[in-house]
Length: 302
Image (tube, rainbow, N blue to C red; front, side, top):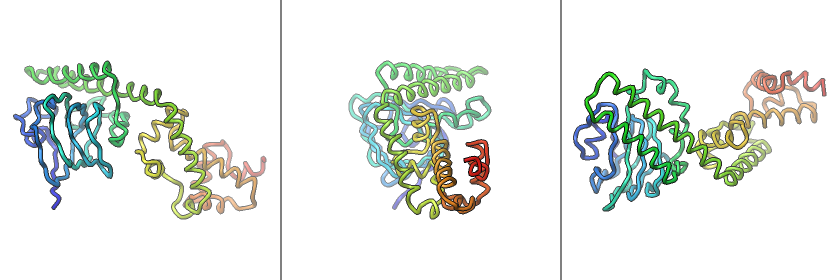
């Protein structure tokens, strides 16, 4: 029978991992070496209401994450946001493990600039197989920041502590943004393949009956069909083409509409429904936003 465990505090994390009570109620850095060598949670599913950033090496730790399974053994950084559900399948720490896990509660950043901008760090919504792969130098940089965060709450807490902790978390996230940009760049050929596959998917989709049956495909739907998260797909396309996935879909739809407006006598409403719009006015709004003129005006001008 599956057991559901909700982890909504740093204290519960420490208890689950068999550690001493935390030094700070809202943030904790846990060294892999300090974790129990064996952690058997059976069929438990863990709902995390915390932000988690983890880097592990020498740890045999298999997790079911959403619909996928991932093996945390290769020294990559993985990000998780509140609301994610993990299913530990096995977890064994080797004799010489390295790495860390940073847990922080949403409350610690809620009133800060980072709290307002946390959604800008879209990698918190990536799938685990889209993890960040670091060079040795990059690992040193992020680990130094982790050490600063840990040192800050280990000493006596004063009025500056929380600000400095948040600043270092934000700096860590900014470095990870930079490293993801580097990862996108060095994987240009692979990413171009993804762009080609995305464009081919749109062509196939709109050549079928799916638009009238399912409507215009969402970014989430496209990502699922291409086996990647919506955020990762959109970020990848943005890096490669300068346009988000939503922009690509909208542009594709408008170009299809132009062909239909010029190559058929179908009414505006018929074209709208054929492309997957529930309401013709939504089609007209998008078309005018992209072209500066209405569908009817476009037809008369061309």
